[in-house]
Image (cartoon, rainbow over all chains, first blue to last red; front, side, top):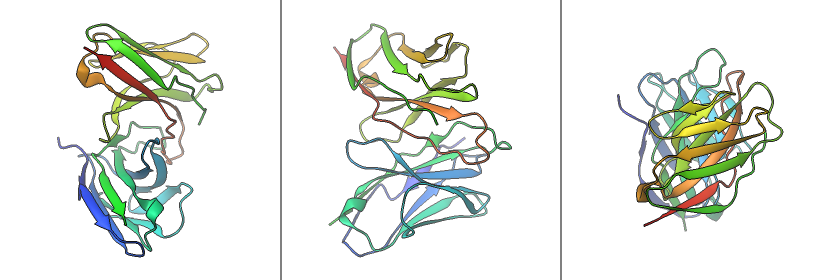
Length: 115
Length: 113
């Protein structure tokens, strides 16, 4: 059983550019959540995807968007990058069991630096 | 989700038990207590969770008080590799399909040789 994987591990972009981050969920998991973690802070929830649809969103602007694919992998897209978008981006997967809370398992993260 | 309060930092001697406290005085009856840890900018690692009974697994033990207003994570024999930020989180049992995890600032545990 493979865990959650993310790519790339590190990325450097300039202000105004667009970026796509990728996540493969753990085997058997159909729910993917994305988090942003600024330096020295706890992770902040961005949004969650279940069965290819967004079903929950945190306090992030629309330039943060995502996709989930039929194999449950996911992408996080950020448009018009700002300096404050520099952070560790974490993906977490969990099995969805009829609305019950399930344990989320996190990937290693992608470190994004915006110059 | 209920708010949690943790000390910002703790030290523990290598080989001794590390006891990490967490207050969650506003927890409701359908909220679980979860613990994660994060080692130096890696992804958070799930440790353990419980509702009202004490729980134990290969990593740690979780002791929840009878009134459920506080809990303690116990690492029985701390090693240097246990140095990390430990997050105590409460999560609603009935998420309605929406499963975010709300992290606080956690406890920075330093295991000392």
